[in-house]
Length: 132
Image (cartoon, rainbow, N blue to C red; front, side, top):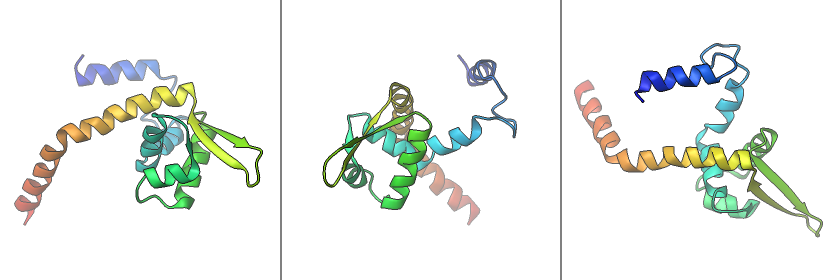
C-alpha cells in the first residue's frame, strides 16, 4: 500500500480527524511519541522493570522526567504499576496488552532509525554543506 493510501486508510479508521485541532487523541499521541516515552515503552517490551532499572536503561533521562512519563503512560493505559507492600515499597512497571501492542510498533520505528541512520546523517551533512 502506498503512503497516501496508508494515510487515507488511517484517517478512515479514526473516529475523528487526527489532523484537526480538536482531535481528542492528539494529546495522547503527543505523550506517547516523545523520545522518552518511546524509549520507556521499548525498554518495558523485554519485561517488567523497577524504577531504578528503567532509569539506568534509558540513558540520559532524569528521575523527574521518568516519573512524569511513567505516570502519563499509566494514565493512558499503556503501563501497569504494581506496588509491593514492603518497606520501603517496591514498584514494578510493566506493559499492559495495549502498551505491548504500541511498544512493538514503536520499536519498529526505532529499528528504522537503526537501518537508515547513516543515510540520515549523510543527508544532514549534505544539507548543512549546501546551506554554508
